[in-house]
Each structure stands twice: as C-alpha cells, then as structure tokens.
Image (cartoon, rainbow, N blue to C red; front, side, top):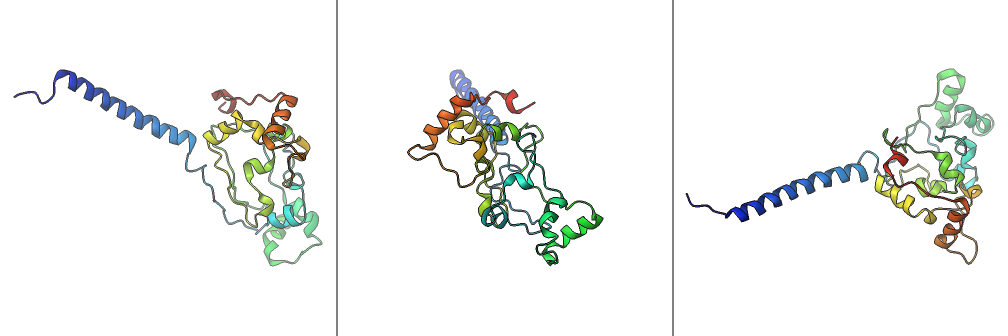
Length: 217
C-alpha cells in the first residue's frame, strides 16, 4: 500500500499533534490557576441570615471597617464580628426589628450567627491582610466599594493573574496606610494614582513577591 505521507511529513504531523496536546494541557492548567471558577466568581452575593447593609453602615453612617472587622492591621485574617459587636448598637437601636431575629437568638445563647462567606482564598494560597493594610492597600482594591453595597457582592476576580498584576504594579493601589479603610480617599491634589503610588512604593520599600513561594506556602 503506497504511503499517504512522506516520512518528513509524518514527522511534522507528529510534532504538530504533540504541540497541540501540550497547548491544551497548558491552557487548562493556566485556566485553573489564573481563573478557577470557584474563586473567580464576580457577582456572587449569597443570602445572609441577617440582611446587613454595608451601604447603610459603612456608607451613610460612616462606620469604619475596623469597628467590625477587627485585627486586620495585626492579623492575617479579617475577623467576622461576633454578636456582641452588633448588640453594642442594637440593644438600643431597632432592638425589636424582625430583621434582627437571628442576632437576638444568638445574643440569648443560641450560638454564633452563621454568616455566609463571600470572599475566600483557596486553601493553597496564603494571604495576609495585615501585610497589605499596613502597606497602604485599601479595602476597596480587593473588595470593591462595599460602602455602596446594600448586599455585599464578590466584586474582584481574586484570581492568580489578578493578584500578580497588583504585585507587579502595586503603585496602582497604594495609599497612606491610615487611609486604607477610607473609601472616599483620593491622591493629593495635582498627583495621579500612579505617580503618588510610586512615591509610596519607594517610601515603604515595597517589593511585592512574584515568586511561587510568596503566596503558595
């Protein structure tokens, strides 16, 4: 039976096949690491046991993020506020509101309120809130403008590629550390974000890691 392809053509076809297979494998792996669907879930807004409005509390009332999420300046995690924090106000304000029934049950010994997590890094990723906040990365950079959200929405991808882009150009997100929780902060008059961010980057000696071990430990 005569050969359909020459030996040279056959060799090239094999190379093309191997190349195509390798590209598919790398493409799938890249998609997994840069955009895993369970964490790149922009728009995710779970129903909470209590309809807590950040737009009201952090926006109109001006409560600081640090009042509820204590420890972000010292701890690697941003803590979920215990019932005591809610009751500091709601023992006197709207204390009989039916919307706060889960808070009252918890306060009376019913265990913690089972809040639904909105933001969560994968188990194989190490993220330290304190390191970022103390260097002037604002809450808005990762969480969006929660002060305008009646219901908190997963606003940013939080994918590997998204994080790396910030590590490569941190100046796009830097501000004075004491302004990290200020959603209305703007660079000083006459300065743009990149220019001012580069100044802060040099001032604080920021060298955001881009190696695997920086986030995968």
